[in-house]
Structures are given as structure tokens and as C-alpha cells.
Image (tube, rainbow, N blue to C red; front, side, top):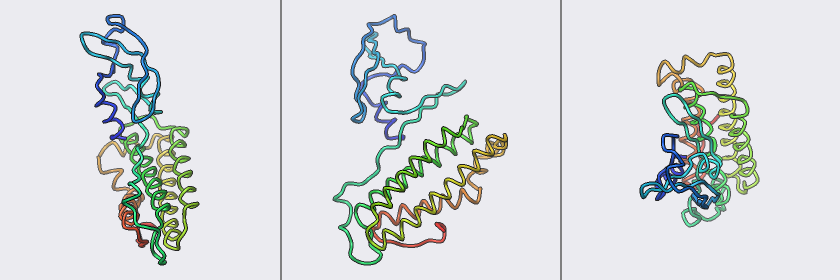
Length: 231
């Protein structure tokens, strides 16, 4: 998400975040905007030699979300694809513990989706931002979809064993997400704002983090390994 945001902000334009600059003060027109290969139309104003683009239009192009708070603006953009180039992946193995190339790609994508789901939810809970079932469902459904893709890509015994660990991690993140959502509904999440470590020290949170680190290393190694944190 930070990579997409960084790319957007490095565009040769200045984003119009607030209404402090009046559209009427400059020459206004609609222009095609392309961000990381995604294109759309946005209102553009040229003022004092600079170009301003409506931030809400850019968020729409990127299929993101924008939330204005009293003291900050929260911009959420989709997680960029972290799949490494095919040349960086080892060939499909023939031994029992090796991971196939297609499964490694699918597994890395699933891991990235679960990481975004957990980290975005944790940030929202710690900062008292609104969290709804529909908001959480978006991440849950995407992670479930990517897990099905990983299951379809499983070819070797190593793939199938690694898929079990990915599934366990998905179930852990889903259970943790459901727990936080229920606590948010009952107004019981204030305890997580008291200390930066309160949410991180939660046993299930620690389990998810430890398993996530292991999965990232295992998927990058090309061979199945096991770890108690993913059970």
C-alpha cells in the first residue's frame, strides 16, 4: 500500500488535498490520469504554473478509500502485487518438500493479502477508526479467494503441506479479525489505544505475526518447512 501511495505522490503533479485552493482560481479541465497502469478521468486545475488534481478522483482510479478525520486524512490503497519475477523462482521440484513455481506465486500473493488485512485492521483499531462488517468482509473475501487460487496451484507434496500452513494462518487471521470486530461493536477496543503494545502483545496477534514471518521465509526458500507457530 505504501508503494502505491508513494508512486502516486511522486507523480509530476501536486494533489489537491483540501478545499483551501479554489478550483475557480485557475484553468479547470478534465484529463486522463494513469497511475501504475490504472487509468481514469480526473478534474485538473492549472494555477501559478502548477497542476492540481482532485485527490478523490485519484483514489477512485486506484480503487482505494479516503477518510477525513479532524486531525488527519486516511488514504487506503490496494496492496501492490509482491510476486517476484519468474526468473527469481526455482524450477518446479520433483522431491517431496519442494514448492512448485505456480504455488509459490499464489502463496506469496495470499500471504501479502493476509498481511494487509491484519495490519490495516490493527491500525484502525489502535486509532479508534470506524470498523464495520462490510469493511472487514472486503479483506476476508479477498484472502479467501487467494487461498482458493493457492489450493488450485498446489502440485507437489511440498505445495500441499505448505497449503495447510497457509490455511491455518488464514483461519487465525479470520478468528482474530472476528474477535476485534466483536470487541469494536461492544465498545471494548479502548484498551488497545492505551498502549502501542497492547494489541501486539495479544497471544493470537503474536501467533499470526510469528507464523507470517515463517511463511514469508519458507515461500522464498522454495522448500516446505514446518513451524509450530502455524499450527
